[in-house]
Length: 127
Image (tube, rainbow, N blue to C red):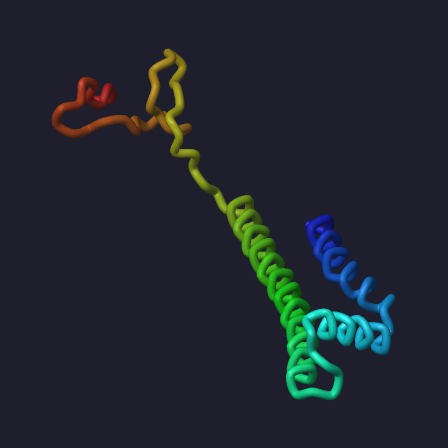
């Protein structure tokens, strides 16, 4: 389980580290260049809208990444809980087993688990 958590932590930290390498001024300059490449003139309402959209897109991407990490963490915790509960209880293996003579469909206590209904070719051999 620790390897999973470490992987998720790395996935979360890499984008933050990359974003941390870019100052807010540099990010703003990249956004200005992006909006200017769309043909908007600096100082216009459409340019301001474009800048807001760039900022919102970045925030949405970060939120989506965090939501994905949280969902993965919940799934992993649920799987670990299921594994722990399964390992901690006395569950009888109900898959077909074989007795000392090689006859199938016996559980580990020797009780017949095969077909008992009408149309069965084999009836309970214990009777």
